[in-house]
Length: 122
Image 1 (spheres, rainbow, N blue to C red):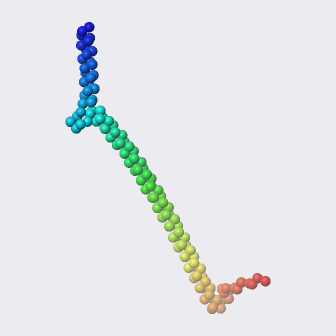
Image 2: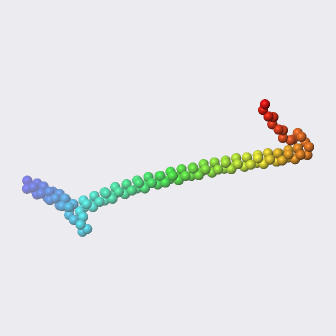
Image 3: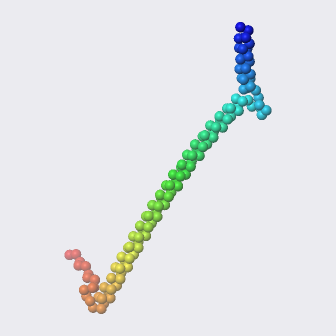
């Protein structure tokens, strides 16, 4: 019985010593519990910062992809516009050459190539 009491007393002393150690101040003035809480807060803050950084990087990548698509569309539309402009200019040049040839032939006496006046509506 005495042995049981001594064992129980020793166990209680060890538990009390463990809890006392948790509240015992370190040389920097903090307790082990404060250090553990600080470490947890730091880990939580790091995880939050990493999530925000990942989200930001995803937005940057999406914006870059969107900008590349817009640039590609712009270049394609600009190229189509320039091609149409060149086609119209070539067609106008051909029509002008034909018109000048018709005027020259008309002045030379080929009445089939002269412009015919439009008939007036009655």
